[in-house]
Image: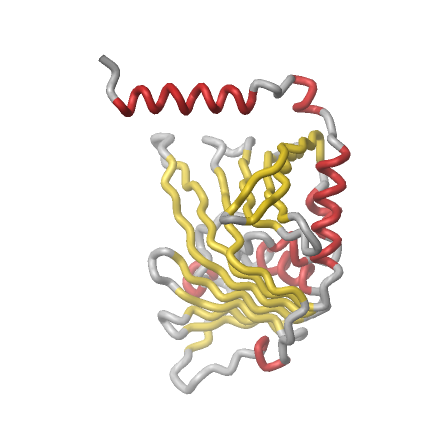
Length: 260
C-alpha cells in the first residue's frame, strides 16, 4: 500500500509534468517578444525613477564538496537616489548586520556587530560604483543590476531565450511569470501587473557552476520616488568605531559568501 507521502509525491510529479508538457526544444533557443517587452517595461520603469526604496529576503546555495547544497541568506533594504547616492542595509541569517553607503564621493562598508568600517574614495553613478564594490572590493551586491542606469541592457545581455510563463500570484499579487536564458544563467522573474510593474520574485540558476546552484529573492516592499535626504547616505562613526582597510574585505564585509 502506498503511503500518503508517496501518493502526494506522485500527484505533485503529475502536476509538474502537466505544467511543463508544453515546453519544446525550440523554446530553449527562442525569444518570446511578449516576455522581452514585459522585462524591458519593468526595467525602464525602475530606471526612470528619481529615487527608490525596496526590501527583500534572499537565499543562495553553497554547493559542498559532496555535492550537497546548503542554503544561506538574509534580508536587505536598499535605498538609492539617482544619480549618485545609495544605502544598503544588511541582515544575514547568522545575525551579522551592516551597511553599505555611497554619498557621491566615498563608499563606506560597516560591520555593526564588531563596530568596524572601511572606506574607499569613489565617484560615479550608483550602478558603476556598486559594480566597483562587487568586482574590485570583493563585496557581493545581489540585485545590483536593477540599480544601474540601464538595467534592461544588463538583464538581456547574452540572451538566447525568453519565454512567457503566464499569470501567477505571488504573496497575493497578480504577476506575469517570465523565464529567460543567457549564455551563462537561467533566470525567472515574476512582475506585478498594473501601473507599477515591479519584480515580486526572482530565481537565478547558475548553469555553468558546479552543482548548478540557485539564488532567489522575494521582494517584500517597493517605494518609488520616496524622499531620501543626503544624511541617509553619510556614515558618522562613533568614538569607538575602528576603521580598517578594504584589503581584508572578509573581515569587515557583512556580505561575505553572498551570491550575486
